[in-house]
Image: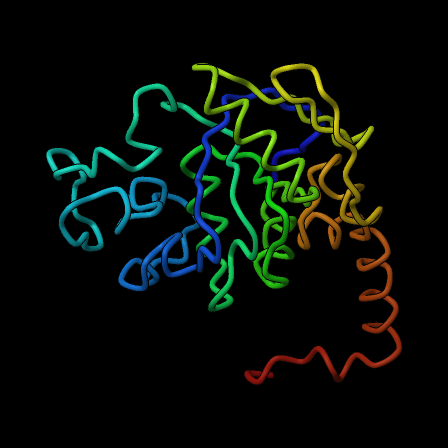
Amino acid sequence: MRPFTKHTGLAAPLDLANVDTDMIIPKQFLKSIKRTGFGKNLFDELRYEDEGQPDQSCEGRPLRQDFVLNQSRYAGASVLLARQNFGCGSSREHAPWALDDYGIRSIIAPSFADIFYNNCFKNGLLPIVLDAEDVDQLFAEVDGKEGAQIDIDLQNQTVTAPSGAKFEFVVDQFRKHCLLNGLDDIGLTLQQEENIRRYEEKRMNEAPWLFLSREQ
């Protein structure tokens, strides 16, 4: 998993509340568990005029010109501004996979659905909760200035607006540690690899019959 320390990126304002995970990545794309290749179908029903299908090329599909990520000024955005209750609905982990594959590194909103919020940390994304008034200010600044970027400093837990205004956010210290060091659940387990090896050797000596194969 990629570490997240500091990030400066173009911000895109998704001015919608209660964005659910089916809106983030529709159900027909959930057949794959590769974690990659979902970016082209992020917000598929909002981005395209037609209905997308798995393994379909998105080249030439008709775009909804009024959707924020289709606007040239937000091309390459890596910070997403959203409204309350972002990521509600089902618990599909494909939602953060699609955001990450598109290039989004952080989502800033007044609130998130709990399961989506947890899944973001496990996949290297930083979901940031700010007061609604602070999010309103970020929306206004990003909308008012083309190319507006937002600075995010996880170590110091700050978000810096294009104007220079700085907002502090709260994050669980264990999750912060994992993001700063690029540790997902597998990475955390592998930190104990030597202890696991010693335990397995000990158990093999104490109870060798537990390790016999069926062929034996």
